[in-house]
Image (cartoon, one colour):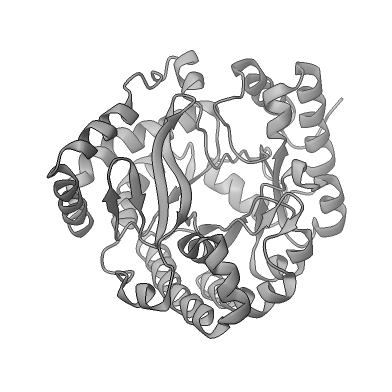
Amino acid sequence: MNARERILTTLEHEEPDKIPYHENLIQNPGLAKRLNLGKELNSNMDQYLAFMGRIKKVPNLINKLINKIVKRPGALSFVVKKVIRNYFDFYTYLGVDLGVFPIGPYSYFKYIPPNKLINEFGAIYELKTIGGTFGNYYIGGAIQSEEIYDKFPKLDSEQLLGLMMFKAIKKKVDKEQKIYVVPGIFNGLFDSISLALGIEYFSKVLIKNQSFLKKIISDREKFFLELIKKALDETNSEIFMIGDDLAYNSGPFISPRFFNKLFLPSYKRISKAVHKRGAKLIFHSDGDIRPLMTGIIECFDSIHPLQASANIDIFEFKEQYGDKICLEGNVPIEMLVHGKIKEIKEYVKKLIKICGPNGGYILSSGNSIVPEIPYINYYTMLSTFKKYRNYPIKVI
């Protein structure tokens, strides 16, 4: 089987030739360097941003450039061909079967000097380097009133930079069939709204102004439906993934009653549209999602990553939900960072032995491969998995 066949067979709760591997994000530059597939980030992006932010006209020039790229995404064709292709080459080398490309929408960004960025939803991020990885880190929400929301640039389904990039990379990886790359959204209904409003204002609106919150949810649902339909129809993709962190380690961010009343109906309609096209829908959420599982099972075909540090016992999930939803997970990040080699080996073998039989299981880490994970620990996870992943399962 190739990667696509392996994933689709698993999502049908049947046994493929071997258990698939899905990693949502590998943000470990030291790993790429160790494998001679890349170099660690040596340039100090933090200093560059600080320098540019001090030059009077540079921020305006950057924002003008961003707007031009958003409206003319073809300008990024070089990035697609070089940088993003190298990214998935790295995944292929590691044996990842399922990769997800976030299609944005990337329809609006605003640079705020020296190192902040507002995204298309209204979430504010700080740009900085941590552990050799340059990235964006959430710090607050720009939408602090109904008036600001009404004036904020609307999401434009005709300016889909992310979808354009996905189409370009899909053509390349589909020919090789070594990795199955599917489109996805990494900020779903709850995430995109709560981050845009910020936790304090979102909480206030949730209790005192639900009519406004319902309006935002309705707007977001309509846009996501347009985006997902375009992605599936124009690329013939058979899977779509939605990332939407709904919980802390101790439980959901909001009560299940509020989630089921306000957000779940929209997800049911999105699910219906995806399944109408014969596609599968994968859901990602960190945290303890146990109180929300009934709604998640109604809408989605697979759940990732079943975070062990959030009181999720994947073995109990296999017994309770294994015939209802595909399970993806869940080698704990804490174990990969601090654990002993023997401990990692035994846990991976237990995952394969208990979760693997009868299909419906995809191995992944408990979130992503973070910079703090030592090379030897990640190698142990992969090598153990590759040794025992073949069907029929034979774990000693």
